[in-house]
Image (cartoon, rainbow, N blue to C red; front, side):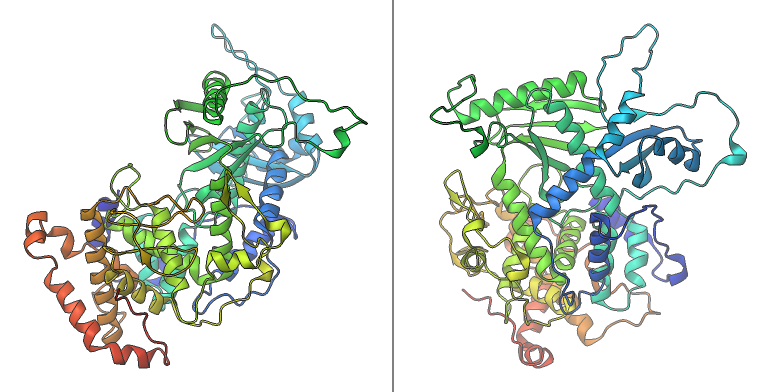
Length: 583
């Protein structure tokens, strides 16, 4: 996919007009004060990330957002609609069951509507008038879900009554469109913000993700009442892009939770349960049953795989209606805590997400990352590297995890499976950074920093925010922020790490050269972020030659230019010196 995208970039004409660039149309009705309105306000503030966030609006806690989204999803239904649907009549029909809060349409092997009612009772009312379809010689498995199929009673020609259905965009922009947008940008900072706006999850896509989890929860609740299916990872940590997988976990902690209301005098009631040898065996048995249920009875769940012997047992499947590839695990609370930490870092400064999205896009364009498991660097590792780099700035843009722990109170204390996952959860208690560096400078110095990082000796640790001696011999060592004995990049090979270093050095050189002599808008040369997404000469050097000659001529020029212009850079950044990358 990356190679295909790069090919498109090469073949495109470099002269583009602003009038040719159009934003995808979206249709979403929302009321002030809703989660949708909050997210729209966040999207608007993300458009100006040159010198950090200036938005002083109180920020919601991660847990508050999660609970609001989950409650929102429980009032929402998913409806497969005929293509000739009349929107006004459709909404009038649904309004018989209660007022509709929001709705939008999207396409995924047909036309679908996501409709949020104002009350849960409206969903029940709609279910009560819904019938199980008659399939002729085939038999239908009756299942009362919130995933419906709408049919017209008569095939009356409604052409004269049809309203224009505007579908929400559920996919990231093509390479051609992205390139056009980047070429139209005013500056490198504008390019990074443009890429963020085009790739980040939309309000509609976020709603669809929570709704999908809620539909799976309905299935699991048949076995485990009071359970919850919660999304984690890219879908909720603010770093997810359109098209990313949907990770979810089955949370059983609320089942049979002891409360004061359940006590009575000297008596204590406990549920009769089955006993198994270990927590892992219990997880495997639970996921095996849920996986079988999704496969046999789950509407729209196809390609179900039960991968129970993995380090973290999971059920993998495709949700046909939403188009999401899903991974379901059980009681994966550390993963949710990691998602909360990343959510906080992304919300603390508006430059963080823009930088992470651009570095990930750069890595994907050069095949440094892959959707196939292997020796490649993962997006999670790249995000950790960006956070670590921003912790190393002077003054720091992001606080260390240890510092966030010092701000925590008793309510924030969190121990999961013996691991200390405590950090302050109230974003408004964290003082904003005084760092005002531009995204262009940060992007260039990110590549300089890791292009010269002593990976052979040092590890990356966002808990302390400083380089430490590697505790093992893996080429790349990035400490898991909570399970500190684990290396999240243990899979990365030496050749892939060297490829990352070579590309980082070359990218720093490209940005440095442009800083001295930036091409004019009318020239036929790519510039800024667009130039970084083009193929690199290092990709064309055979591995055997790399062993004899560890760097290309361009990389040598980079090292020379950085060395000779060190003083110039420190002056140009108003006295802010680049961080030393020497061990």
